[in-house]
Amino acid sequence: MKKLFIFSAIPLLLSSCITKEESKVIANFNEKDLILSDVIDEMPNQLEDSAYFVEKFMNNWIRKEVMLSHAEMNLSTDLLKYEKKIKDYRASLLIYAYQQELLNQNFDTVIALSEIENYYKKYKDKFRLRQNIFKGRFIVANRSAPNLNRLDKWYKSESETAVEALEEYCQQFSKEYYLLDNKWQYFSIFNNKLPDLIEEEEYFLRNTKGVFFEDEVFRYYVFIKDYQIKGSSSPLAIERDKIKNVLLNKKKIEYLKQIEDELYQNALAKKKIRIY
Image (cartoon, rainbow, N blue to C red; front, side):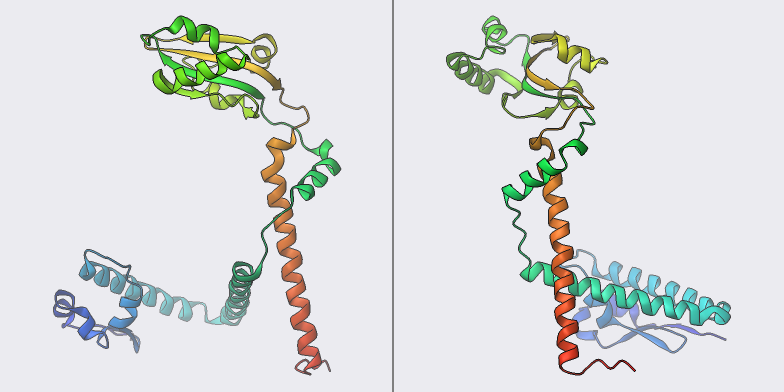
């Protein structure tokens, strides 16, 4: 019969300075010991209640060992199959950890803009917008803000003087604003902030230059400088980060394959590999 021992000294250990008792056995099951120092190694820094952590860790360890013992007994006929899976998983885990360490230490993560542009040109037909995008402005101002009639004119003006006045006004009086009208953005980001959602986005974008909406407190200004409809070719500015990740992953795979080949050839040269 499997026996479980929880030592009576635990309350004393937990309530005192545990660093003095690190070599103590605090629990035992089926001839396996749980040492206090092993628990301390897993303890987070600046823990407020170390006694609770040790007790919880111990209870979880006991439950795991009990379940593991019964699993080994009841799966004895298939144990070799599981042992192979465990061995394969351990090998995969160690190789993955080593690869990540190689990437963290030596891998160059720089992807040149020219590489991104070339990839985009090569596969441009495959990049399609899944959402409507636009270049424009979005401003939310309190209906009681001063000189709101000036904002009514400035928000859709493209004169340099008006744009400067608009930015200054927004900094002082707007609740929220976006004025980067030379950058593509998903229209849904701003549509979701309007008092009433625009259901027909495509129709709105095609037929609107500048408009504002109101609720009881705020006025919402939308200026459409340019737009592209869902399903059309997606611009590089929208796809740049996605392409960079694709190229980076490809570069990682090639780098790790190169390391693997070098290690293999090195082992062959040192006659560490024998094929019979």
